[in-house]
Length: 286
Image (cartoon, rainbow, N blue to C red; front, side, top):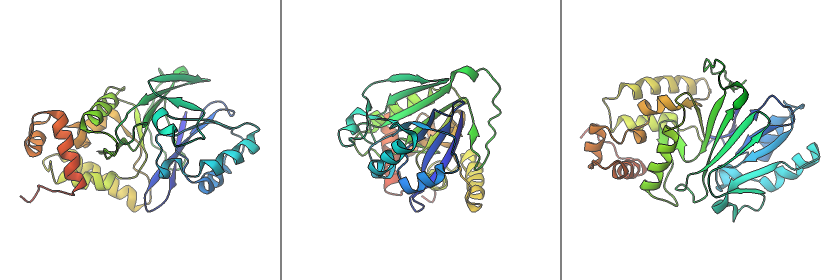
């Protein structure tokens, strides 16, 4: 499958994603929040059909104007795409016809889609883990191709639960739930691409360096990310293996991180880190 980021809402730096499969009748959209941008983008792919829309959660900058998008796609394709959303969030989004309240998998041709509930950012937040079952054993060189997308055999779409070098706010949950969610992500195959809902890599790394300044991986990734952004290029995706090195929220068992968070309990460390980030606290000069 090929994954193509679609930038939305420039100031918020959102991402929707177009996922192309080997079947022209089965392509997917993740969080297509701006129908005008999405429809214009799809003009460049006149031979494909969107069969599924995968919403990671209910917030407007991810669901957007689905009421306007869906009728246009239905008219264009002759059938309305299936719309997937977490059950707890679907109470507020009537367009969803597939609601997920527990782990659920389904297959679309060669692609297996696993929906994983991750309540915290919202009660109905989902991860979408996609696997190209037919090609999983083939070589993947992890080459990132700007604008043309990334060809991969497994990827996870995280919405606002997880960002490159960061995690989402606990709007409707707590640190224990987010710790569980990040553990789920960390248990995926190490070469899984991670596709978040926002372009927050630079700001996440700058803040992390103010807490764990000894971590050279932060500085290296930040330099790379700043160079990318200076050229108006994406920093997505990352991979699971990399997040253990560059994401302070995945490093809650590291002694110096625990010391600065004031706890040995990884859940409490995660909660303390999120609170410090919300308050823009830095310890580097203390």
